Length: 99
Ligand SMILES: [Zn+2]
Image 1 (cartoon, rainbow, N blue to C red):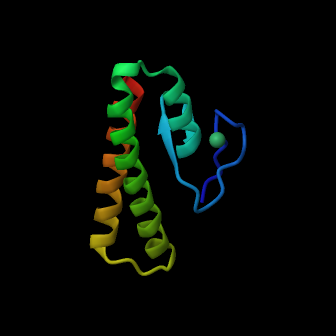
Image 2 (cartoon, helix red, strand yellow):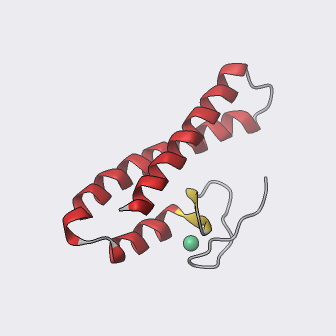
Image 3 (cartoon, helix red, strand yellow):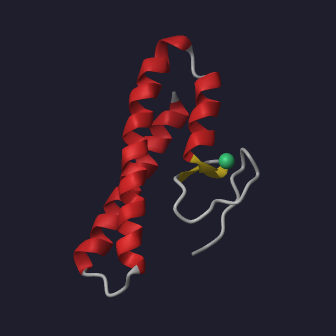
């Protein structure tokens, strides 16, 4: 797997850690959400909270599917599921960035 460095904490993203991609690059889920929490206006904090719960579960699912892929011999449905959920993660990340 490719190696990524989180632009927020400057640490390497370790396999199994939740992370996402923003315009600035790869970032840990926790680093991303805590930085957004500091910058998003008060009236959008509740939306941020909901979207972060959504992204958390999407990223968890992505890691689970990745485990299945790494086990090898993946059925086509697994590849398709991975692509779909990856797209959804990207969309949720984009919405959080836009708050
Ligand atoms: Zn980080």
